[in-house]
Every structure is written in C-alpha cells, then in structure tokens.
Amino acid sequence: MEMDQLVALCKRRGFLFQSSEIYGGLNGFWDYGPMGVELKRNVREAWWRDMVTAHNEQTAPAGAPGPYEMTGLDCAIIMHPQVWKCSGHYDLFHDFMVDCRESKHRYRHDQVWGRWVEARGQRFFVTTEALGHEGLEETEQRALKFFGLRAKNADELVWDGPLVSLTTVDDSAKVLGPEAKALGSLTEPREFNLMFKTYIGALGGEESAAFLRPETAQGIFVNFKNVLDSTRVRLPFGIAQVGKSFRNEITPRNFTFRSREFEQMEIEFFCRPGESPEWYRYWRDRRFRWYVELGLSSDRLRLRDHEAAELSHYSTGTADIEYAFPFMAQGEFGELEGIAHRGDFDLRSHMEGKLDPKTRPLEVEKDEHGQPRHRGSGRDLSYFDADTKERFIPHVIEPSAGADRATLAFLCEAYCEDEVPDENGKPTKRTLMKFHPRLAPYKAAVFPLVRKDGMPEVAQAIYAELKPHFNVFYDEKSAAGRRYRRQDEIGTPYCITVDGQTLTDGTVTVRDRDSLRQWRVPKDACVDEIRRLLAGEL
Image (cartoon, rainbow, N blue to C red; front, side, top):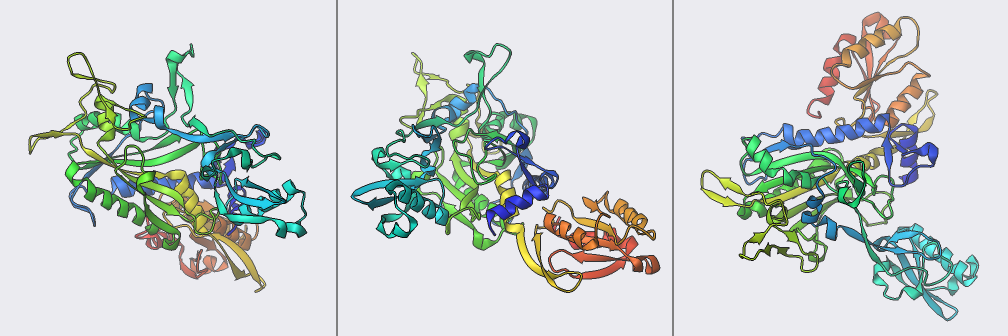
C-alpha cells in the first residue's frame, strides 16, 4: 500500500481532514471526520475497557506478579507553571533545530538526512527530509543540479555511504540544506522548547504565563495524594487518563504520526520499589499483546528496549512498541507506545525538589538550618502501608500510548485491496478496510435491495431494532453493489439486505465483509445474529 492511497481514502470516506482546509490548512493539526471520530472513539474505549473498567482487581491477570487495582482521572490541560519546572519539562523538554539562512525554513536537526557526494573535485553533504528510496532519488537530483549535470551524467557522482542523519556531520560549511542552492546555509543546531506558551487572565503579562500540557502524566502525579485520600485504592494500583496534549513540533510530518495536537492514553502504575522490575516486564508484554489482539500484524509490530543513551532523564528502563508504517523506510519502525520505568522521580520532584539540567540528579536545596528548601509543592506524596507500617515513595511504571498513532496504525493495517466479481461476473478491484469488529465505525449496515415493494419499510424496521444495541448504518441510495463497496471502504464487517425473498419468507441476506460469504436469517433474528457474530469481539 502507498501512503497516498490511504490518505485519499481517509479524505473520501470521512476519516480524516486537514484542519482549517478551506483556508489552506494548518500544518500539524488534523480533524477527524464522521468515520474517523467513531474509529478513534472505539480505540479509546477499547483501551479504557481493557485497562480499567473490565479489570478484575480480585485476580492477577496472566503474567502479573499479583492482583492490582485501576482507577481513572481527567485532568486540566493548563496546569500551574511550577509543575513543568519540577517535572523537568521547562529545562529539558526540547529538540535541536537548525535554520536555513537562504530559504528561511527551520528543520529538526535529527530529521534532516543526507549523503556525502563528490564530483569535479568538490565533496559535500547533500540533504533531504525524505527517507528510503525517495530520499536517495532526491539527493541525487539535488547533487546533479548543484554540479550542473544531467541525469545521463549521474555516474560522475561518487557517493560515500548511505543516507545518514545530519547529526553525524560536524562541518556545516559543507552541507547543502534541504531547500538551499548554496553550501553552508544551515545554522548550528540550537535548543527549541516544545511547550506551547499561553497566558491566563486579561493582563497577559509574564506573571500570568502558563503552558499547554505536553503530556498527561503530570496531572496524575500531582493528584496522587487526592486519589489516595478519596478512594480506597492500595498499592499496587494504576491511574489511567485519556486526553489531549500539545507539543510545538518543529517539523510535523507523516500524516497524523507527528502532530502538534494529539491525544494520549496513559497509565501511571504505582508499586513497591522492590516489585517494580516485575511490574515493568508485565506491562511491557501486556501492552504489546493488546495491539496484536486488535489486529496489528505481529510481523509489522515489534517491542524494542531502549539503549542507555536513549533513556529519558527519569527512566531506569524503557521499551517502545513500534509499528512498520508505510511511510517508513524499509526496515524502519515508528513508535506507537512507550513503557517506562520512571522510578520515584516524579513524585519526589513534586514533593521536594527539582531536576538540575546540568547534573541530572535530583537537587534538593537546603536552608540555613540544613533543612530541604522545597522547589516542589512541599506536600507529602509518600505512601503509608497500614499493614507493614512502612512509609515510602512508590515507583512508577508508565505505559504511554498515542491514541492518534494507534488509530493511524489500525488504518494502515486495515487497508486492503482484492479482486471480486462485479454484477456481470467480471473481476473488479475492491478496496476494503479490515478493521477488527471492536474498532469498526459501524458494526453493520442495513439495505433495502430496491426502494419499492415495501422493502425500505422492512429495512428501516430492522435498522430501528439494531440501533439500540450497535452502531449501524442505513442506506438505500444507488445500486446495491455500490452500497456494498462504500461499506467495504469504511470497514463495516456485516451488511444486511432486504430483498424480494424477504417479502415471501421473512428472511434477509447477511454478507461478511472479508470473505464475501452470504447467508440468510429470519428478519426478526438480526439483533441476535449480529450479537452472535460479534460475540467475544466486543
């Protein structure tokens, strides 16, 4: 599948639209259409049900060290600015960027790629923002243009190595920027904070400055004590949250994969320090299985442990669940979810200290009496175990998933093309979305074969019976074959058709999206039939 095919289908069938499209769009922001909002809602609800509401706190799930409890929160998008100072985001949450003096464009340093090339006695690094075959072609075309060569003279170019990141290049004077005509137009990389700044109140001065949250996790940490005091949860337990986050990405790209506004599905799982390695392994494996169970192909999905140099400042261990998106180069994967062992960094930071961006350890300033001078809230965020009479700061395991990236992965996985016979028996290409039934926007569609002979009335009655139980669609416009194709393209698993035989024996045709198998059931049994087909899936 080519990515432009999926993008075209998403626009045509109402999954995704460019935000503010009638004004030319706004880079890094996307709107979910009628089908997309149902798909994404189903992803979120499947996650919440599987992680929170359907969890049985009395028994230990497979692979878990023991039983645990789950609860939820929905926190504000704008929080006290000190939250981001104590969490480390204010000092450390940044990317490196480079500016092009010639084109006036800005690029994320680690997302500019290139190759070393030599011709006519000159050697330089020619760059692109594309990866894979597209990147190789673009660098060749730009090198030919720079040297004034034609395509037939491409053998004069001597290439040194594959596409590599700009971060490997030390001499910017030998770099041809992605849209530049002259060498040395890129600036040295500099830090760029990714948080969106805003102002609270009418005055708008720096004293009222705040930030849109770059993650949902901190809302959970600052409410840790509130959850303990207002519920009866005991360690180990998890607090889940689904909500919007905002990051001022330098170069948003690849459809909804890297956006400036996105939705997260996060769990902060609190446990005893000595038990945290076991819980980390449990959540790693469980979250990976969740994607496979909902239809992502295991050969396009992988679980990758971070190397030491990749670890965040708070993490003692992190693993990424990654998917081979179609826009990635061959063998490349993109992150779907990160599972991090955060230790006690967050609760301790908000309780008593701050992170020093130079030394990295938690720094706690002392007053003239040698007592801690609190940079955090000063509140006690420790946990007291009533059974053992111990007080300690729990360790945290964080499975953090992107709802938008998960939705995009399910879209990519579902896209399929095959050949089916048309009304005349000739093979014709069919595009379909093979969504898992739990995720499909509609569970079934109801059609009258023709708009006469009482068929629409029967179909509407069946639709009315199904609607209280499932999200279903009614359609009586255009030929039946076209209606089937529309439902295939939005991923509806089953279609119910009222035809001439329905008027004589009271049965309807049920059609399976993937196999095209058709069978008949009594019209009064449609609710039970769809429920049977979806049994174990919802």
